[in-house]
Length: 427
Image 1 (cartoon, rainbow, N blue to C red):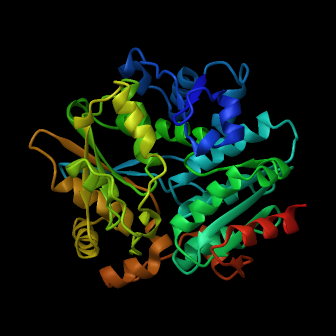
Image 2 (tube, helix red, strand yellow):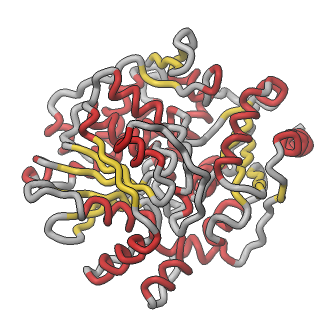
């Protein structure tokens, strides 16, 4: 697999090289030089999840990792289901929260950890990543205890749910967490600064586990195939995916799946009040506003990192721009959607509710909608209970961490302070 830096065309990399580097020169994203079209999609969809995922990833990556290695990686990473659950006759949800940290990012995080542990050959690595909620837990649990790999996770202090925070700030060992006194965009900017700093990048053998890393992105392609495999032939005919979107890695993965031949008619990019992309799709003007805090905090991103990859898919002719629409859902309608889902017997948290609201008002008579359920409702227990007015029980994973003490270190949104902290704990 050959990848090219979308900002610096001369900067190319193999899959392993791109996984190790994370970001390319000039903070550019790596993108495949070609995306394969799969043959006999119907036969592929008949196969079990792991077997099918190995075929999809082999088509993308090739034999670079060695015979049998990709099979071992997928078997170790994808150990939990991704069921499609019907909500009504027109709409279903793809539940992606059955992994160890109850969020869709378990797929990408665990796949990346398995890949990196094999291609690093024991060399020391520092994973530096920013999280607006679920990435932190997924990455922390995926890498916890892996020899020679340290993880540093930045998150906006006081702007993610307490249970989200507890899932990754209580592990310790090789997992180091930092509460930045600002928003997610500031955390992400500090990560980018670190990758531009040769002292840190080379001195700490820096890598990133954000959705910018190609390994996480490719892992997410697999569950779109899994979703379609569970639908009837009629439902597949005019299929619309609604994706709750913050940093836009999840949507990018779906669009790669469509580029490979998966029968998806179109996508809805569903955002909260941080609506840079919906406005851009309507007006053609890229005009990010300051980030606004919402109840769907994992989507509180006004400058989504993965957007250049989506533009590349369209500009290079893999997809037509008409296959994507954008919808902004405000706080009031997020709550209305949560209540509407509850009335249909389905309990949802705010992110999935936004995707439900966006697609349920957008379908034609002949279309069938699937919205992505990206996190277990209990991860947003307080919000869900306040909106629905009924108690919500905690799954065991959250019970286990809820009483533990956070080990996060508070820091200002100052890159030099972060740099000094990282060298003090990792050198």
